[in-house]
Image 1 (cartoon, one colour):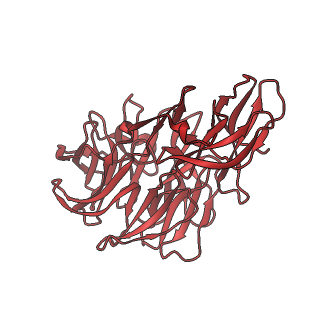
Image 2: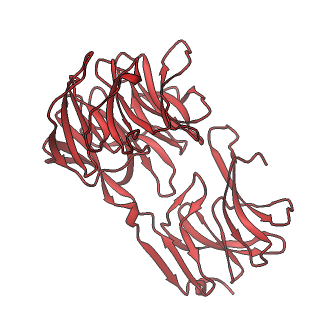
Image 3: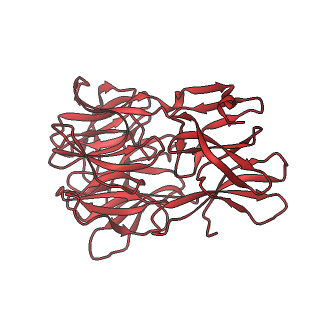
Length: 412
């Protein structure tokens, strides 16, 4: 079966057989497909259930319920042959689901109750000045993810998550707010610009690898490096020589690596400890990295020379994430645990000197990005405005819908 992982077991009425979802590589190898199977506690070979790629539950009416394109449907199911019968019957739309694992947030009782969690995440991209005053809305009503402003300030790369949790990159014009789709594979996130604005680096596929594409869209996606782990690009140095990326693994959690761009050079470790290291950004002069680490027991912001992570200096005093450099490299902005944006003056050299932090404003509805330690905001190239990804509805309080007597709509 060439499977990668198995998910969502659920027993059938006989107590011997069960549904489960298996993932396997797509023909091109860039992503994963998912298929429902019936397994057996007796060790019999699993039986594929064609046409279902999500978590599934059997209900006493003789139907299996599952999700497709964010909609829960019911279909007749033969528990002897393990085959579907008839056509799927729509039950409810807008369920929270995730294509990456076939997850569906639903639960069914034996007496005709069905509970689902709605797909609730929604956000807006808002322009703010340095005091937090709202200057305008770039876009609204989608689940916007990670965003990056181009070096010229005229274009904004954003990943947008669809209701079924597939994601692709879009390019927004910073003045008109008009978006143009940039990728179409359904698994692309985390855009990072090259310093000349000609190239966008991003992660794509399941598990993700590092890709690049010309910012004008020509030439298609190019695999930058297949590294075998779970990588996410974080930033490119201002001189264009290095890309810093995160690597997730079971032994050392989240690590930081540096990949030389050009000449097919090998990546090198930057910081690989048992702590989480993440959300790295190069200083404007390409000599320093700001990043987040929880080596102290809490997420804090650090700076360190690019050539010596051991010489790191802690900038935040009581927790901090999402560091952003000011235009001249003499200022570092980060977010505190109580959602204050703080500006800290820095003097970098053989000794790091930290000035008195100044609170800029409080922004409690910042969208949390794909990587811990990062949230959705960016400074414009001149450092005078911020583009904030502001949550409109929090997925942590996504509404639960309880359907009663829903089986009455099923044919007898």
